[in-house]
Image (cartoon, rainbow, N blue to C red; front, side, top):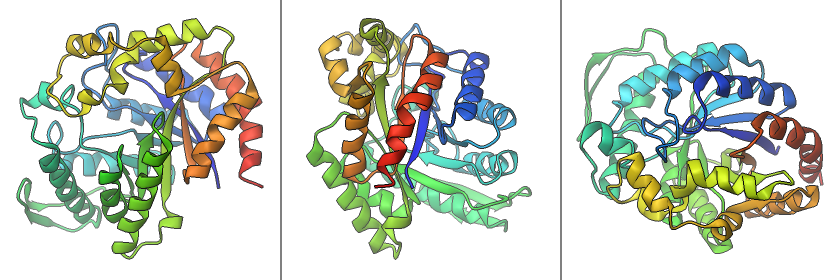
Length: 333
């Protein structure tokens, strides 16, 4: 079944205001909230509240919507045992409506907080080891773990998960998607790339899942999509550039770019035309339906919509009431 979600941006909004929007999304009919987990924003104009505190508050302020970090990096800034405990707690605060998005991080958060920024290959290996440790802890037994990167000594979660924790593994390119299938319970990706990229991502994800003895058709396939459903496209683009301009720069995910100022400077090369190519910026319902359809056709079953403003509340209410009925009808055909 197709699920439709909202990208909550603590890099842009103060935490209390963002909670108010979460309530609106829940009541409007969104299925999923994906909230970034950053210690630094993408620009100096931004915010950076602590996501795990916010998730706990959001659990108390919402009723039905699924909550997940999108995504947490449990390998440097956090020890994986801490994220295992945090995720287990969330299953009690939001029963049967929590998922754990995981990825290999950005220097903007990890190097800034720890002074460490290993190669992608090492970060990937760390993530795989972290997942193994977290899954062991979620069993509720004492765990003495002797890994290459992480160790525990007779550690036990005395508040184990109330329900299984699904790990949604981030893969932005085909080469990482096999690991998502093998070690995760689902796939997390982002929009705005060429169709052949998604073909490779889905194929490798399915191959990895089958390698691990899983049925890929039963696993979540999530994609974040930039949208603006408004007549004032220029204002929407300017808000995106102000807070999120560098997010489409590949170097942000590989190089040692570790302060909001450095991130913002990298984003200055991004112009309006580039932003418009990343998603659907249109006041027309049919444009948004056509845009979403291509990602459904690629094989994604959960579309997370990211709108950077202005008027976030109005967007949530209008998109859910005007665009969602058309999108939900696609999955019934």
